[in-house]
Image 1 (cartoon, one colour):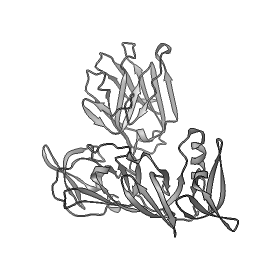
Image 2 (cartoon, one colour):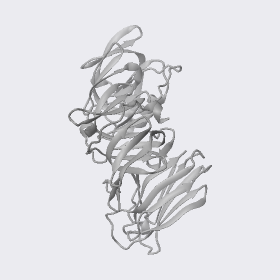
Image 3 (cartoon, rainbow, N blue to C red):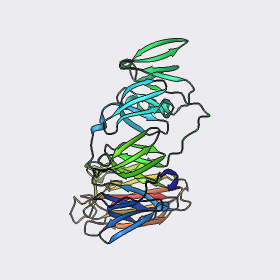
Image 4 (cartoon, one colour):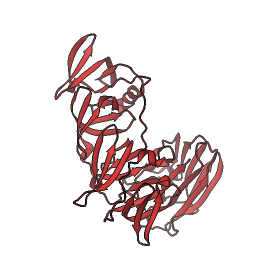
Length: 396
């Protein structure tokens, strides 16, 4: 329930805070935030004040917050719930980890809320091995060492982290391990450790995401809006650093967050293959349809044919989305777009720049395998066949 993860601050005064509030049914209110109360979120729109009951609230986003890469530096901190932050490790003493984050400032959190810290840079040669170590339960702490393209680890107890060294109790003796020699560290995970209920996903302007138990929104005396977040740590996030609050956990899955189990590209006459992209167009820019920018979705080039296969396991009731041609292309091109559920055609549409974007709202009850197919249309050309499938989401 929304109320479980929402700390109510009370009715808020109107302020010039452009937001997009979206309900589970797909209704989106755009305008100025008026109230964030126990029973509703109210937005002043061009048609006047409108509201969404909090029980039906899916997300609140601030689309005008500028994207920043300020958090690109620092260590990768993996929290116990699997989410990550980029921050500089200041210290670990007495079971408390202190971090310095480019947007959030100083953060203090219990060691139990952290699963691991990667000091080494991301590298495809060892990323899979690091993830496997992260996902493998261990009662012992581990110091991970990289040897060429292999990750090895030592089991023991991490007692502290300083500016240059890691205090590591190994075979009854404390050893000072230089940070520069460690690829990362992992903290032990007792099998009976309770997992906190995390209901709200926080998205920062840096693109980082983490989950929290509670969020409170309140306006400061200087007019600044602040989100007070209770996660594995407590932090105040100014609106200028916040992109969105998402309560979809357990209710909805965005297709762009899913990994397809199969991708099939068939190039046009052996020409260059355009690979699909998530949450950006094929040139790495924001997704656009008819002048509107979308933060979530897929960009798919028809090539001769592009086919994405997802296993959704019969867990969802509906698939909702909007489909059209990338705004950057005004050619008289056409492309064929299909969605199949367990081999049955659920949606078929000819997409072109001359047509308005088409709404997709499909019953996918009991569907196990979902296919998204884009093909060059009856013009038999793939020039400009750049399809955007935006806000594609599966609802339980």
